[in-house]
Length: 344
Image (cartoon, one colour):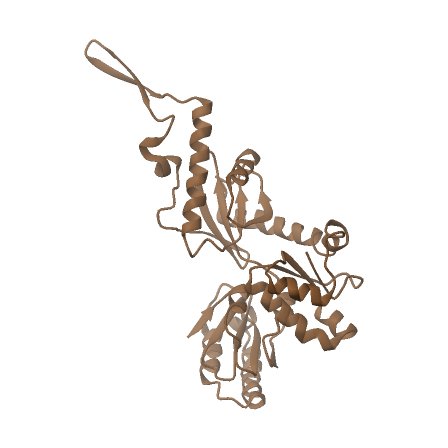
């Protein structure tokens, strides 16, 4: 049985036994193109022959993929010489089916072909909130046990502005709504956001995720001010999304991520981090060992192979180590003037 996995979770696994097989599939083509299915079938025969392994479970898994109507454009299927564990990496695109047999996972290849990160999205309004997941550029609501959808769910009878006004006349009682002041509303809002932060921190499945905040600027700023632990992404959606469908939210978030990535690759190295950047190979490795790297930048596969192919394997290992530490890793494809590896 194959396991769907993210790049960062794949990096946290023990090293796979060489040779490691990576097969990239265009699922859209497999769904309707008989010649593509034949091509993949022939690839599987080549893989078994070249790896010298019995990959029966791997072959069965790929055969199953050709029959499923999966909602993904592409997928990478990874296994090792034992074939006992098969991993799926969902791709937003795979142009042509191909495969590689290497001594270890080629992290540069995986990041270069589909550098899409998954995020948990937090919609934050003054008195309500909702979680979404962004996976392979698709957004879906995320159900989390005991997550407080409203400030009332979080604070219950302890809401500062929750007391009802009432008056009695002639034996009847009339209710006039809540006795709320702007100061009491603010106190409730702060307590609500703290409640959300604490709940996420206590959830082992969520606490290590990277979060994108969505909401009005004043709500985002307050949440960030109160947050002292959640890893927040540099990408934000500073507008109300209460009336938007998941597909509309996905477009907003993906556009913002793409815009951020475009301005934070080569520009980030040459401008933003210019005075803070580490470029010495040994120094970067030592900082990785002590978990002191926040962002690792590496050149493209072609750039490394053209300039210094001997260090390809070492950079590949650096990427694995960084990903396992949930460090941001960016493959910079568009600028040949940057160092082969750098970090901040």
